[in-house]
Length: 124
Image (cartoon, rainbow, N blue to C red):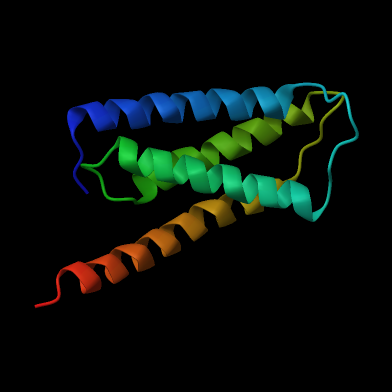
């Protein structure tokens, strides 16, 4: 994947903003009851899908591989560890699994989308 220098900068700034925003949301005391169950897991899947997309486009020279996946999963685990020590939050391995699912869904969907686009635009 290639990208112009300015688009890479935009993706990197967006990635930093997303990482900071997710950390704030994950550690802030809530003024309303925690939405639990499936909706919470969908939020994790969506957040890490977006983080995977931003990380992938932020580093276009690297393939989307363990060099990107492991830091994203590490970030998800770090959030859960921080939440373990907060009295108004809790640690959940299900949240980490949902994070991994979001990253996996990005990987699968991007590969399929790229193959579809190649097939459409490279027809002769």
